[in-house]
Image (cartoon, rainbow, N blue to C red):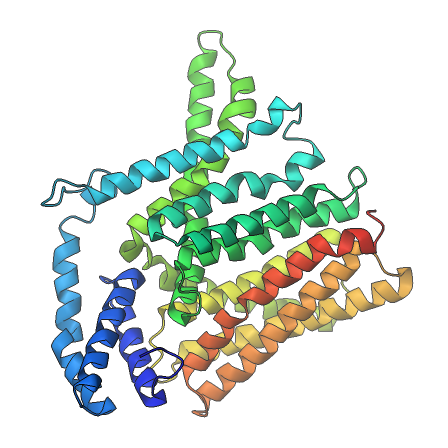
Length: 453
């Protein structure tokens, strides 16, 4: 029974069963995917035996067991080993050690990332050159995709498709005759990792990108990866300072080693290590998402409301230079991140709460701020003409505006009881490729369109 010809009622019930199970912190989305496959297999067998669709679903769910009991079973199985499995694990009955194997694989892929980031030096390209900056994502992301390709066991066809995506990115990043320190070269360097992050998502989803739960899990993983990467960077900074202090006491100055080896290699390898940590500690780290969302949503809402009030009170226009544009876009991205984290941690079946109204305030404030930024960008283009930076900023803010507008509409419908919360989740996860496609357009189309300036 394929998904395409399945009964709509059955698909709705399976989705409800899956979402309910995903709320259990002890069960990861990978486990849920396996359980769903088994559930579908049981349903198919029962329908073949002559049961009606609704009867087959009820019997299959009964055979799977009570969800709360199933969650407790997973918790008992994993809680006792949770911490020690992070590094050493507990060997299984057949003598294998999946946790240790996973750790070794992550370490090897991290070493590969550290080695790749040093390859340009062989050809006389330092990390300060534009060429290095433009290709940085091509040094770091392939090992990360390789790690997930190995971990998810992707088929050869999927591996070839991922490799083709990186090959195409490498060609467009290097075949164009960019001007030294030109605008289009900088835009390519900034947008290439955004476009390639969708490739990472496909590898992370393990062939289930069509599944909304897997896309949402990828969004959650991205935020948690950022958190762990920052923690690793802070720890690395402390280590560097202490190393410099103790070596200085014996007359050895390790600064050249730091700048040439420790910083670039450590920054590249830490991406894979942080990814492994998130994977290994997923059931624990997921608790960070709702906590951070609850903490920062009212703060960002207050900042945006204060900014809009100050804008009206002063009657001034905003300075829409490049740094200001970057700040606005980052703020709007953070707002969408808070919305996504809230959605990933929320029970979609729960009724509206006071925090949902605060989310709408945040969305409306961000929407108005984005409209102000768009007006300033349009005025800038009208006054000074088109440029790569202005067009890129215009496109990005239009894309953000569309997301914010429809997210606000869907959230308002949910608050009024006219739409389920899952509609907002589906919109947010389905909109992800739009960002990647725009970033790819900037990388591919902008350089020749603006004369490689």
